[in-house]
Image (tube, rainbow, N blue to C red; front, top):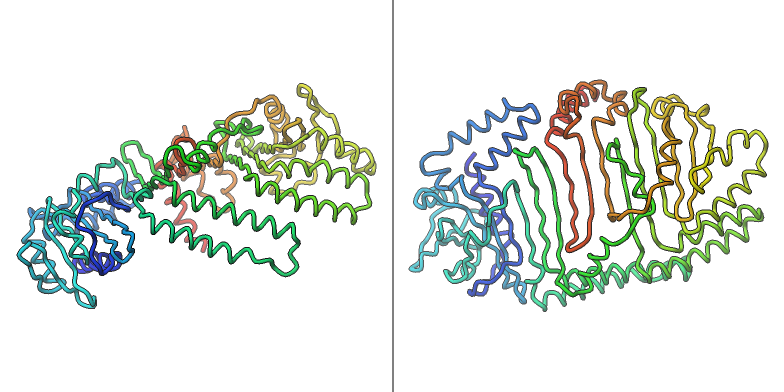
Length: 534
């Protein structure tokens, strides 16, 4: 059981490190990987196992690890300090290097173990060890220094002057199980130029006009590809660094995945990232703090893509107007097109509940350009519909400020599943100059009035949140024990039942997925039921 671990490290060093040597002068690494110490990993795994109700299974694994650990660690490796690796990219890619760092508590014990597993190790006058593992055609080099063993298949990468200090590479990151940091600023100019050239070449090949593609469609696709090329080029040339991490914090009972990118100050990329924090949403204020689920999206198309999209829309509208003799349909198309041409996609959805009757209320909002014009056309169309349909559609049923609220009495047409979720309440919709709102469910009227009265707020590019305990009525049919699992995991207060995904701009671009540890318990309790059903 011990042999594959060390052999795997040796193989990894071989795979990630080029054969040729690196410069002997130490410099900032292009890539840094950090993994918790063995002891920290064991504590993290113990916490996760407890949340999942698998304590007994973990005790067996923990027992094996304890049996392997003695006064000299695990075959000479120190289980109390972090593990890591770093790589340095050179202008000549073949001269790049990568080094693995393993903490050492006893060099002789580790050396003896390595020789048992990988074969005889030769030591030169500069204390550099060389070993040729079975099945690997080139030698593996390693050196003991700074209470670590540095492993590479480049001897120059392990020159004493080239070694990076563990404290620099593996700085403490509390709670982070693993992290990966890429220093984009350390990519050599020659490599940047090569990458940019490859991007231009690959995307350029995709610009060729396709059979049957109109000039406007081709222009839109070309504009989108040009925008992608520009963005990737900016990341490569103007990016400062990317940092990603997985964090499990037992004390706070939090789990998270994060990815953050920073740009060099004063660059176009830095401005693009900063601009993502500026937009205000016409509809994001409808999101409530106690939602069962909610989502919000705010995307503004780049100017050249907007312009190309407008040409496509003009072409499509012209085609549709020729095919559509109905004047009302033509008027509706013309009223909607300005919203699409604006190139701003501002959407929000809030799923609220459940109520005492286990019903939900759904609120949806979308930004519009001249929403009142769309409303006037729709009202004109409704007034010309047959009487039996007009009985279902009640125009100007309610009022909220200057906005009219229209009602669709369609609850009677809901099937059993929809009636279980929403009751038989009507659907409401209303327009403001800058937005349109729809609601369904037993509290729909109040919800749409609140949405209409709300002011624009700052918008994230993307945000999605789910409260699992609040969704139990939705999943109980497929998972009958979902209610019991939610009570056991989240308690009466439903604390810790939320999962959130967010993308945010500002000083850096941040993507985060966060969850609370009780979610592990909830999902683990549902898993046996899923297996039984299968």
